[in-house]
Length: 203
Image (tube, rainbow, N blue to C red; front, side, top):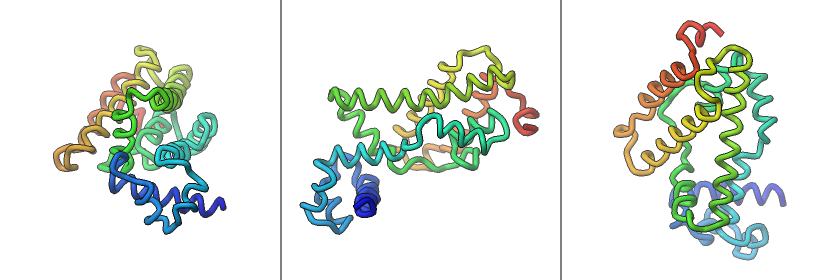
């Protein structure tokens, strides 16, 4: 049953990427997962439940586990921050989360829905905690400047990523220039955290 549920979620994710949140239907998910109506409703009561499960499983590593994993694989707090923002390579690229447009639809169209607002706030605070903890640890360790509050820097990271996601839903990659904007944003972070070119390469 666990495997069947995982297969349904994998198929549903492709549906949400292709159709977006609003246009996707339970029928689309049934067809993509090759499952009967009864088979799908056995696991999920509606489209919202399917989508929230996908979002939750994307955040399935608890905050502490995420930070522990990063600490084990990172050579410095700067390296840890870059891996958290850009993934394992820790370098800006042209890739965006393919589910980002569907997530935006889910939260923006449902902004007056109390459940979605509460859910969105929880997700935001989880992300904020991860970035703020890394920055705070780097400041206490002396690697980062304390010129700016760790939480404000963390919020600016989320604002940058979310801003790109909004633009990515509307513009082509050529118009958006994700990699170029990300390289510039890294320079902003280096300035905000007092990181010199030498120290960010040397650690």
